[in-house]
Image 1 (cartoon, rainbow, N blue to C red):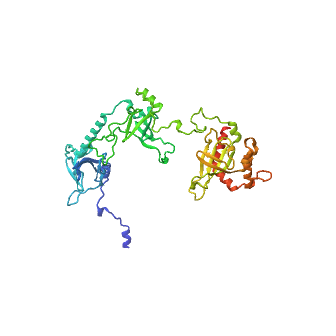
Image 2 (image 1 turned 135 degrees about the horizontal axis):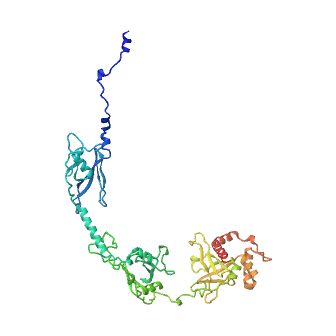
Length: 514
């Protein structure tokens, strides 16, 4: 019964906790949290510190400027250093954002914005920063909080930066002292005006012939060697003697204090370079200690000197060991020395006989013992009247097979005539530019061509080819007809392999003629 009475009794909390205060809407609207009031508001101080330099005779210390930023929302701070070009040390953020404890504070308290002012020394992790200025917001905020902000201070100059600035000014003054402001010295103008224009001279050094080229676009010089036939030099290494570069007149003329023992010279140390006015036919040019005698120049170079420099180049000087036309053996008519003297080609003959070739087997009339056993194939082009000789590759012979003589009309020694198929009798000896060959055999196509053109071959020549082919079993002994099935297949494949590339070239040429 007593429990039922307690359930119906009302509980009044005000008797225990007191009465509730009325809610004040004005006070609620006026209250702003600390993190919201100072959100994105910072105090910025300009400071510097001295860093000692050890082991350098040029400087003892440096002045490094930093910026101390204090964040009001959470009482943290950061130290950053603006980047300076070519400073020589790491820059950027020196102290990351965090609460920084005071230096040697027994209670371990952290820095507060009340501890900062202009003209104060702040020790942050062992580095003493001197605050010399602050921005306008920081000055206004500290003044509103009752802190008297001092006036800005002067920053002591950095001796290293001051000396480097003076050196840069001096070098810029020296470099602009000799600079001409004319349009002719502008690099872009010279490239657009003289690109591709080259002054070419024939020069000699140690009885060797060279091509000296002067490039007008950038005043550089290149020297290339002119190779002669059978001069005994390796052509794979190239003939460039001096790459394209500016050449000083006196490459040993350097300042007395220049460290030439370990430093290469640059254009700043060179006082004078070669120019077109220094290159004259008949004079000697010194290129890095080498004496080059100028013998001649091309027509463009002579026109350039006469029109631009008002100077006529002297006449040509003969080159060393220059050979006269009588020193050479008479060249065949296929040599394209003069277009007017080039023999006229019989186009009808070329179209009718293309791509027919007469093949003969040769052996070298050996004078030395090591030349014994060398086998060759002679091909006579009926369309061109030229001869090619190829050597068969033999195992363990020490020689590489291939083309022995390219396509050329071979003259007979002591006469103005050329070799023709009428001279290729079995057993005959041929003198090919001083090399003696013996004709040892032929193929069935040659005998077939002889029978089709009896007016071009005498009876003895046809009889010799027929007897050779009968002995080989390549023609019928009674009727004299060619039996193609008995031709040595292996020899035919080898000959086709040697001449396959030339056949393709000739077929392409014939299509172009048609």
